Image (cartoon, rainbow, N blue to C red; front, top):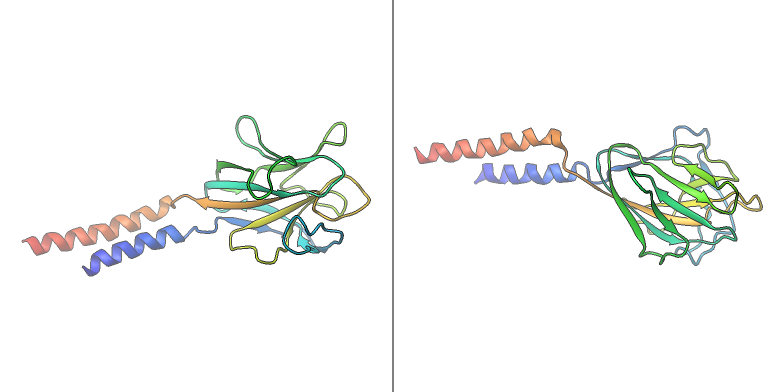
Length: 201
């Protein structure tokens, strides 16, 4: 019975080992933390006035979901999750908190971009580029955000402000089981099986 409990506990541990799955890396910036004003408080609960520059990485393979949160912009912007095949797009016409796109991704840099469609050609900003005060995206400091929720606000090419609310999305992640942990489970189950066979002798 104790060995069965051990096996079940190890299986539970394996499932939680990669529970978060996402990392926001600000190491490429000397001063990643920023403050900004004029954020439209109707997009999220409470006004947001600060955030961080950086890039989003997936620690392991899994399914990532981006949900449209809202926008406050005179320009037309959109978000795209870059995959093999047509990109998965979120537009400003989506339903805040409901409209979303999902895809299985490998570990590494998450391939997504923000697009300012008011310019010709369109202004494209990819995850991994260096954000600037007048163009880029920031990880928003959102009060009440749950563990594993990442809110990103885009600041388009309009130079009149730097409010990072021109289109806002939320990222969440569901990691797949870690293959390297499978031998651990096999060992635990083997111990249980060995103990059971000894009792039958």
